[in-house]
Image 1: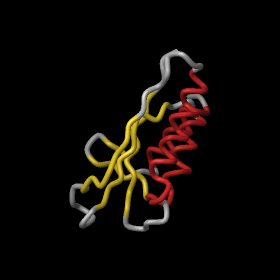
Image 2: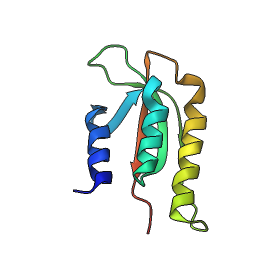
Image 3: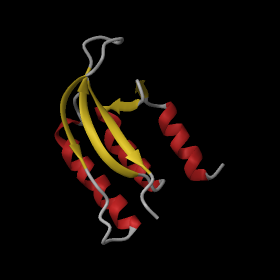
Image 4: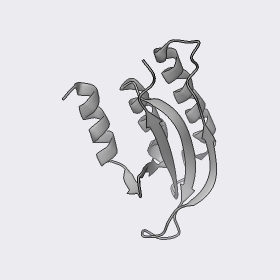
Length: 109
């Protein structure tokens, strides 16, 4: 298993899983986005979530989504999408009761 695969598995183990989606406390979201990008993952979107109880389904407070740009390098697409995601959640990273669901995937090669 490559170092990037191990890093990705570590990030996923640190997440709260809701159905097939992963989320992290808003206070950790910027770090998680940067870590995902450093493993070459393209951030496809983020959602701001709030839970009424530990077993409740999340309430979606806002979202944004991104696409890689076929006119630029994979590395640039990954970096730009990460920056856009961080900008979208920036005002909420100190909110202790909020979570950020991060959708990501491998960029086209």
